[in-house]
Image 1 (tube, each protein chain N blue to C red):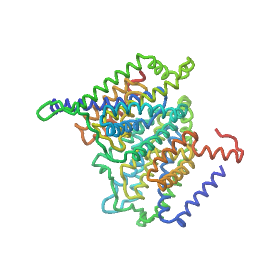
Image 2: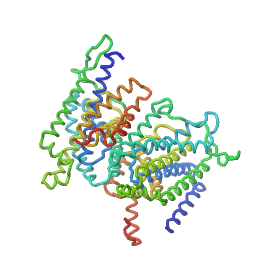
Image 3: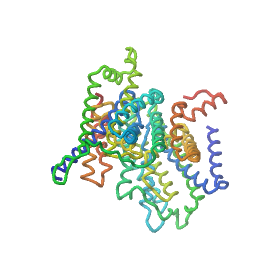
Image 4: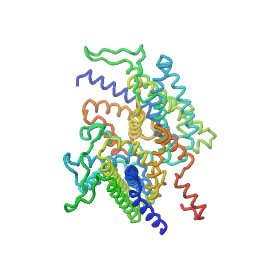
Length: 320
Length: 288
């Protein structure tokens, strides 16, 4: 408890100091990773804490990104606060609608149906005039964060974007931590470990799962918004199933069911990606082989190795 | 739409549905019997199509290529089950998803390394390279009819295999109670290996059969995979009969969707899936 607080503060301090020492390229890279960490955190609420393995989470990331791209006026800067609120709301609403269908089914069905709905969103943006096809939409201006006529950030400046995203990551992290400690979060974890028990205790399981799905979608939309804000465009690839697969991989890398794990997983994933693409243009081959080896040889993910290491080192009892 | 255009679309829809059935039946059998969600199933379709391309260039004859391709895909299925999938039986769905996702990346990159990223056409065999005239301007290619006929024959063969043979009995028994089958002294692992190889061969065969019509291109496997997920969800997991009905439904919905509401072409099949989920969350049919 106390130790985790210290770890959080150290990590936060390192991240806060990073732009002072890192080159712009790395500042932008870490910004991207932190956005992915928010995305991974949102999925962890579903996979790690509600027991719903979604293979279509990229849909809401994409919806958030497109919300900014579509709402932004063509010849002037968008208002950050309004568009951000709208993007989170729209992504959450999309997840709520899809959730009404998918939360009814379980297990393998859930995986397949979430993937299928995500693909439907992909086609909505890819095939219709509304999403402007496979090139997506570029924005001419970065959003402006004015409050009472004062511009708080300059979002053309990578360092400002970095700090904005860092604050967002911290906010999402703390929000989820509070959520998971609330009665609502406890109920979700109860559903994950034994749905029948929760149902016989009188919990409306369907509604809890639906709420979890919608919140996770809204937070993914938040991450998607930040991504569109950083790179200035939204395209259908943001909703592709590779994106959904990669975010699941981040969770596995960092360890499922731990908020730290989701953040660590995002860093580990991008590190792997950068390393492999440095080695070869066919880096996906290495990534694929790594995933296969990870599943076969390390059933609990990297976190299980670290956990085992820690247990032998500190002599803590096995936690179950 | 006049009668002949309608007929052409109907035949196209049925042909597409039957082709989807070949891929989806293997997928649903692997789900239903082995309890494994296999994202890489679309890759087997892709591998089949590329084998049809490479081997028909090599041998000069599509039919020889298909026979060779079937042998190779059965071998691929046996090896994959032995080396990778046999580790997955007692793992949770998430790990199955991840491993098979990794497998997709591996297959796609190997395809890119070996054959490259170009789109290739595969010639229609000479004996089927003609069309039946319907009106002065409309005609229907015989190869598509041939495809449909082969798919129907395979569907019947699959039915006979599952319903009438000793192996089929073991498959059905294995799908309802794994431990019981094992304790009765039957080799369930062998059944799994055969079912997996059968699934791979069916998907690869579908790819080979489709290659002259659809041509071969990167990413062709994932498109088919996701549509087949829709088919399996509609049909009910583990139900081959359900897969057939759902595949035909989706084939027709997709084909007529493209003609009647071109703006929503990509979305039609998902709307059908959503409607079925509302009506019957477990799919139309449960188990054969």
